Length: 311
Image (cartoon, rainbow, N blue to C red):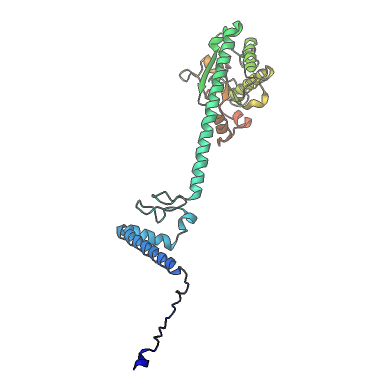
């Protein structure tokens, strides 16, 4: 019994090893799950707060998402709601916008701004030219004597300079395109003032309504007004006005009277020089009215072929 009590006590200790190494993949999976749940919650909230018609529009958009960009027109997101309207600009909420429409609007605005700037420049040049010619007339005693026959007005087409007849002081001999000496002086001075003009120029001759002799079959007021306009052109060019600045030289006969109440008044016989604005130039270039030939003019009948007094 004593020997059994003296036996040594053996204690066995089990050495525990550490946990095996592992990664954090479960954290990423958990984060994805939470994100998906949040997205699902937001989707449910949006669907619950959107009207039925808007839901149908959204469904139609996803059924054909390229319809608006390819064909234009109203898109599925054209209604105002908390759902943006789509298109190239995500900030828009009033429907989709085609990229080409935006480009066209930008080009149109640029064209409008360009035209406005050209109109402003034209107005400055025309105002300066008017002041220059007015000062030229005032400073020239010979021209100042005929001031009553020189009229200047700013019209939508530009600066209009009209040299008109007076009863006892005609610009041309009766029935003739030959320029009177004083008329030549006026044209030469105006031509000199127009020497450096940037805008183009239109020139027109006018007569009164008195039929020209045998005008129903031969030489008429139409040819006479055209010849007088051309004679005036030669004087203007001789004084320094560039010939290539002229865009139109026409004879209008009595079709555009200055005094419509008295078509046979001397004031209707005149030469009109118009310094055109750029807009007026474009309008003349794009005019679609048919051109009238000399042969057609010669065939026109006057109301009173028996009258023989030329204008």
